Length: 200
Image 1 (cartoon, rainbow, N blue to C red):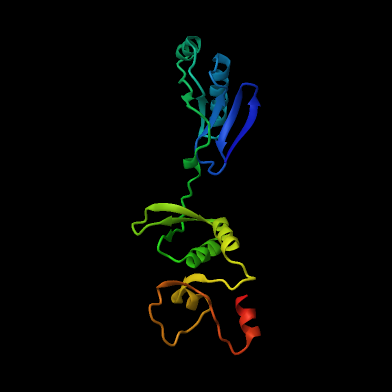
Image 2 (cartoon, helix red, strand yellow):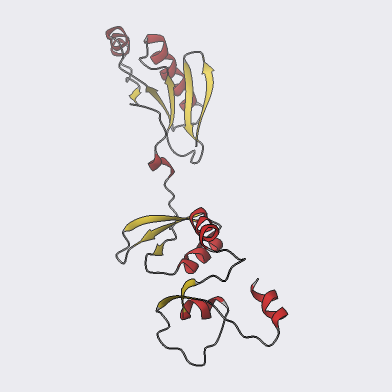
């Protein structure tokens, strides 16, 4: 996040408040005149003398020949040129490892990862770890609303492995557990209330 605070009508400090060890640029307006460039340079030097060594004078455009003459005359370094101050995505890339899901993983596993990370999106990668797409919880919710009507007997596309994992079952015999089928689900339990309490 970037923050700007006025210290002079022509001069402001632009700082990265997420890491005060980074450079703090003291900068004037775009296409700076001599007053703007000199103010930024003087204020940055003052902050350095007060102990903030990471303060640096900067400018947001090309200076005039007059400004170049003044800085050259007093042997002062020209403020560092910054092409723009528009925040970029790269400035907010997290250094923390990113949780991803393989494109062949089940949707339920992906949703469980999102729940554990308290995240609304999850990058989908292929077997080589290359980004393929993004999974958003809203997309899953839209699918459920559009395709599953609890008032009707619905047929759900799933595999026996996924079904067993969802209801924490211990299959006695299981064939082709990974095969995805679309069929009605019939569950036999000794006590209906217990099943409703556990899985509703």
